Image 1 (cartoon, one colour):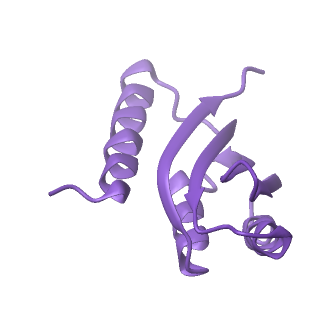
Image 2 (spheres, rainbow, N blue to C red; image 1 turned 60 degrees about the vertical axis):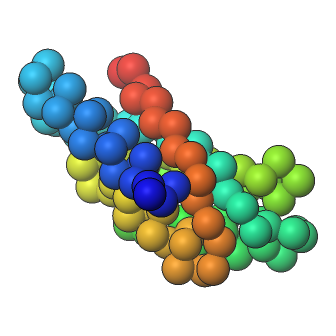
Length: 105
């Protein structure tokens, strides 16, 4: 049985492989969105936002308990989606989905 985090690992491996194939090994800005279970109030959102913002390389972060989501913008390869997932899950929340979007420019 697959755990939700397994999908994150599979997605990261596929994106990393695609980057290597296309020669995109240089640092670039990435937006990542997380679907997060267990956020019930503004304090939950603030805790996740603060934890993500403390990670070196994260340019901005936010979380919304009403939507059950969090977002972060960071420089890759300085930060990884799995590192940010670990930060969120380390607070006791569950990440069920991750969407990664490279930013042009």
